Amino acid sequence: MDENSKNLNFQIQRFQEVNFELKNFNYYSSKEFDEEKTFIDFDFEVKSLDVKNNIVTIFLHVQMLFELEKEDYFKIFHADYLSEFYVQDLVKHTKTIDNNLGIHINPLKLLFTISVSTMRGYLLARNQGNFIAEFPFPILMPDNLIREKKPHVKDDYYFFKQVKKKVRD
Image 1 (cartoon, rainbow, N blue to C red):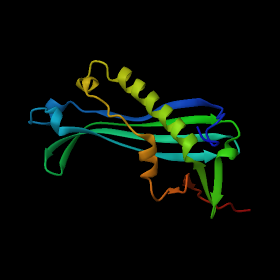
Image 2 (tube, rainbow, N blue to C red; image 1 turned 90 degrees about the vertical axis):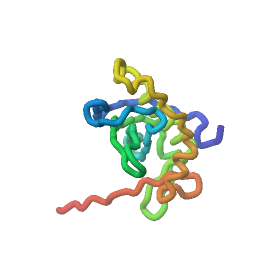
Image 3 (cartoon, helix red, strand yellow; image 1 turned 120 degrees about the vertical axis):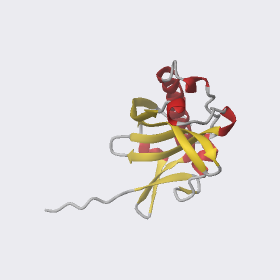
Image 4 (cartoon, rainbow, N blue to C red; image 1 turned 45 degrees about the vertical axis):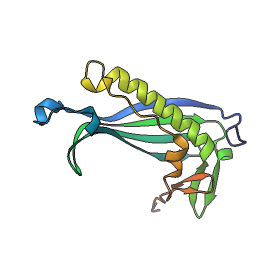
């Protein structure tokens, strides 16, 4: 474990489902369901870094798609989640370059992994009785997913672009 993850004191403050859509495949499609033509599309972003209040918010997006034809997909399932963490002394794990605030990748990997694990449990409970409950959720490699966010990643930091609010007197 590196210096930026050592002694990371954190607590999950909130996990919230912000979108959930599940379609009955047989109702919407005349195709026969084939697991081989079905895949999970997953994405995430660091929604906010609040250094003043020591809060990190991660947005998770997951959808299940069925390939009807080449490059033509039917969305069976779509859900979005927010994970909010309190991270003690968050500033120790951040860096600012050109007015962009970043969090070191190693603590982010830990928070991301916990977010995905919480989402998996939530999806398992939420989808009991649905045919998608049997569909295996893929193994995710946090380091790879984070480093794929090339516009956000520089050196070992994931940068969250700060939006300056205009305030009038």
